[in-house]
Amino acid sequence: MADKELNWKFAEDFIVEREEIVQARQHSIELGIDPVTPAMGAQLAVIAAATAATNIIEIGTGVGVSGLWLLTGAPEATLTSIDFELDYQQSAKKAFHDAGIPNNRMRLIAGRAIDVLPRMNEQSYDVVLVDADPQSVIQYVEHGLRLVRAGGTVLVAHALWRGRVADPAQRDDTVRGFRSLLTEISESHAVISALSPVGDGLLQLTKL
Image (cartoon, helix red, strand yellow):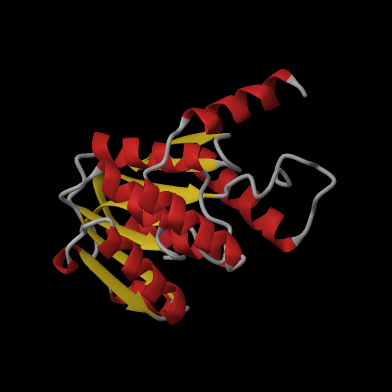
């Protein structure tokens, strides 16, 4: 195993998840949903904490793994989460309840994110997490940058898309979409950006 792979494995194994996150992760895997890895979840928590987030929105609820991590870092924040799959959201709601998160701190919206996001208030969120349909990632990030306040951060999970974005031989639509996003961001003066290899890539965009 190469040194970098050893480092990535060590970084993942270093994280000890709370029992409710472990259970949500197992449920996610059983349903065939690809959750954020433990190391990526921990990074989400650190960013939420460093931002002193009180208002978070995530695009893609899954069954609550990423939401639980975000609220770990910002325990007093309100989380708005959008997902097309109502059954997944019901599972996420149970996971949040099991973690002791009160109803008034979570707002689950069932619907297509592309339809819901235009109705959300501009510059109203401290952190925006994009973890949904990769085919629409550029549109989601555009909405995220509109919704986040100055000094807030947009996070894009799976930004290296299973190692395929870094491989020049991979040219499918999803890979091209992520590459286009990364190119646009690298040329933007509206954000400070960083791309972490944690998990399968976490793109971080802090709005200036």
